[in-house]
Image (cartoon, rainbow, N blue to C red):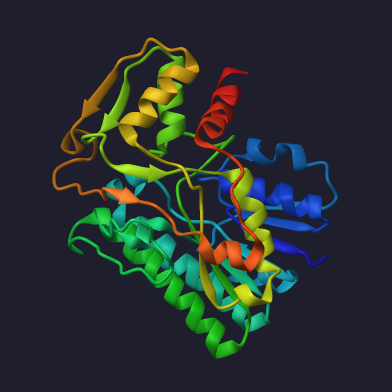
Length: 320
């Protein structure tokens, strides 16, 4: 099995990916600056001879080159994440998401190491089609609004990754992730399910930003992570962007009610205007539902976890 470099491997999704890769028999090399990830997420792997952790940044070009040269596969997940991070620190977030990805991709292409990058459903922007397939149009707001800087940067990341792959012949896969949820995820950066669960368990008001009518489709990390590894191993996936997520849609208001019911909480649901939550001029997308046909055709992807199962996973972790 090839040695796999996972940037952002101490993060929520990254740490689950490292668990999966080790279980498959890979050696895993983790690069993470712990700015949003946590050493606790990979503490159980510390004693494994199959894992090595390097604390450092994807902005360190020399370090990235050194680690990529050791690897036989690269999974690039490190990024500035979360709506609050993007809105509050747009320039720093752009630097990490653009230049950090360029460092990783350039090194992978230079050393001939197959690579995958994690992208996001955010790139579809305000396209509220019934199902978003991988060729769906991107509809973004004004480039002068920091809200759309993350979507813009991740779109450019995809372009950089694919163009390097085309020029070098090194295989590349892009994962477009739709609202992935599970254990080890925190609400610190605006992730809605752990935030709602934490508020409900603490007896605090469950704060819904905006009208609550905006609709999302939530996927389990336990469905998505095995699919990421499987796509990387599937030659037909190379040179493609592939949607990954769940199939069950809910409005944010419905999500709040389900969290309250599943926790047995007496918390009220409080609606907070976007202006109060994020500042003036904030825009959001009304609907975001993935077409998973391509992932199904390539690797037989069929999400097994329903929304209530996903919420219960977060509740059980918080309550333990």
